[in-house]
Image (tube, rainbow, N blue to C red; front, side):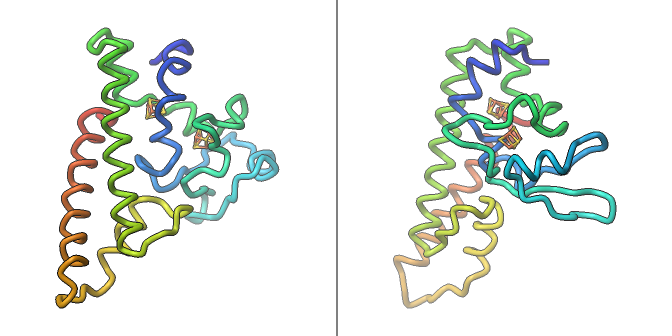
Amino acid sequence: MATADEITQFCPHCGLCCDSTLFADVELRAGDDAQKLRKAGLKLYPKTKTRLAFDQPCRCFAGRLCQIYPDRPKRCRAFDCGLLQRVADAELTPAAALKKITAAKQLADRVRELLRSLGQREEQMALTHRYAEAMAAPVDLADEAGAERHGKLMLAVNDLMTRLQRDFLR
Ligand code: SF4
Ligand code: SF4
């Protein structure tokens, strides 16, 4: 498990687990105070018959920091990304970890830029849903530049997913 020092050192540079790059939503767990979380600004909805959830990008994520950190839901507390785990296990140096964060964020920015260029500008929608919408839109084959952007988007998403899987999830 990552220490508080490691979280303080890396997470403010990252935010990938709060801004929808890694997850499209977060489910509440038994013991989470839904009323308090709603008051804090989270828009909860029933995801299943028994589970409430909120969508990402998280409304409580601002300035690269969680605005409700002491009261964050249990799922958020329990998440320990692969990158922090490897730093904690001394498999990765802090400098290498920061480089990996920067590289992943650049890839995520590239995906967002391509989505915008294809007309998908709903920044409050999770990245994976934005991608699905952009890919579901009909492609005008007479529009060579548009078709090329679709191809670039597919490649950029593949690069991002590969990196997230390798460096942040395990
Ligand atoms: S993905 Fe890892 S390093 Fe990034 S904010 Fe989340 S816990 Fe911190
Ligand atoms: S509640 Fe805090 S830790 Fe959880 S997703 Fe939102 S910003 Fe991130």
